[in-house]
Amino acid sequence: MSRAGRAGARRGRFVVLEGLDGAGTTTQARLLAEALRADGRTVHVTAEPSGGPVGALVRQVLTRRIAARDGAAFDPAALALLFAADRLDHLSVEIAPKLAGGVDVVSDRFTLSSLAYQGLAVGDVAWVEALNARAAAPDVTIFLRVRPEVALRRREAASLDREIFEVSTFQRRVAASYERALERLREAGEQVVVLDGERPVPAVAEAILEEVRRQRPRAAGRRRSR
Ligand code: TYD
Image 1 (spheres, protein in one colour):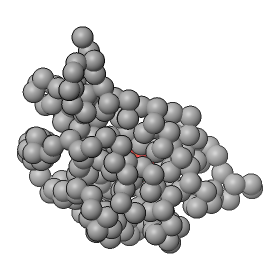
Image 2 (image 1 turned 60 degrees about the horizontal axis):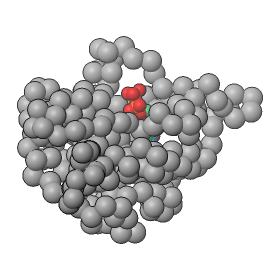
Image 3 (image 1 turned 90 degrees about the vertical axis):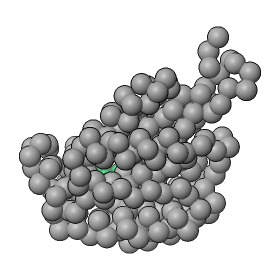
């Protein structure tokens, strides 16, 4: 019988990893999933922008394959709406069913990214927070704190294609925006943990695992408190 079918089966844990581009969230999401599987858990790894239709649209905007007319930048408020729409779609189609089936879900980015990036780009974090009010709170959001210059160096070492956000001065402002956004999530009663993301990869992975093992899944479908 599947986990979901078993009487009293527990909802999975919903863990979000967050940080600047280059903070290591993608690597750590994979390592966390491996470690939880070794604990006997079933784990689904996902990311935002999601692999769904709105996520595909968001990626096209980020890589400038979609722009406003005459190549002008896409409107930041419209992009904030797309990120929020992608999140609700991702949640209802992919995340919530997995959690309900007892599967742990690890998401590389979630609401905190919108508060940090779109809060800054739009200049109205309260509005961005309101757009995301229907997105269920993760059991824990783990922020990997790295200095913007370290994050940028890592990005350059990996020589990944630059997206529209990856400009170093902007990253410094994003870092500050993340710190403010963390406070907002805490004030909203969400479980937020900050870890030193500059330590070696295995040490960060161990710290994340310790935090996650400490978390107990909360009631399914809990909404953000504001
Ligand atoms: P990501 O896919 O993590 O970047 P990559 O895989 O190229 O390292 O995220 C793409 C970009 O989208 C990243 O710069 C952060 C940004 N982003 C937002 O601005 N708001 C959001 O809500 C999310 C989820 C991501």
